[in-house]
Image (tube, rainbow, N blue to C red):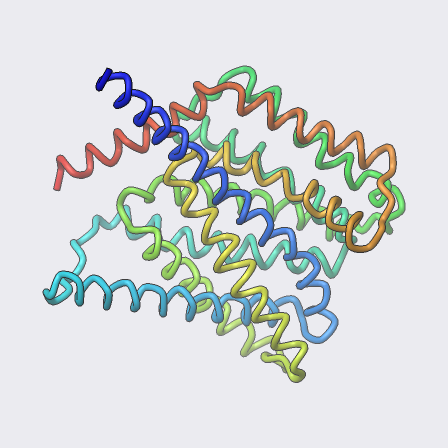
Length: 334
């Protein structure tokens, strides 16, 4: 009897622990769904480069304050001075620097693509990152994905493209902007894969702080050389860049990085394809925008593809097991 109660308690605990990471990803998706809107408003008042710079330094301050508060709470709780972090190998530091580099290149290329092509094009072509993430994980890091996951991935990507298909047909066919949007998806994929490699070497906050700090440092000479207007000049401009830094960068991308502790980069990048679904639903509810047959077909393909991919529990479990094994290996080494 006691064993049955213990097993039921354990089962409920396991279900809760499985649901919580999904909730975290959903919150991140809701935050990220506002990115294109905020950027479109911001670039009407300043350049894409200045918009990105302000977004990054605001997020850096937020993560820095968060880190400081956590350290202070730990010191007060333990009543001990905070010990310096352990020394890391050059390879691990190189990975951390690379994360900051591809982060700023991905943000810059996608933000700039929004000024050269339509939002639908940028979103659709930027949605190709799950393909590059999965391919890169397989080629460089030996990740293995099941057949269901691959089929679901292809369906979801096709759905993301179908959502903006009509807008793609009506676009000005700006090849430069479209190519840059595809390049941004490659950088996004590299960002996910690199973070996955260092997630057990550095704390989540450390990764987030240094990623934004490195990206901000790289942007400083760019804005000083090429930009005449670096900061917003209106209250609405400041509100928009603060929203980009706090909601999109700190909350949205911060929670995505946190989710990489539980799920593989390929799985997370696939879930991010839900972003067009959320945007379409919000546009339908808030702005009464009609959904065409291509929109509905695309949304159905995205949902069906994600369901098919997530039904392949072996891919999800293998990523969780790899995380646990890496953590055990790391603790044993230390």
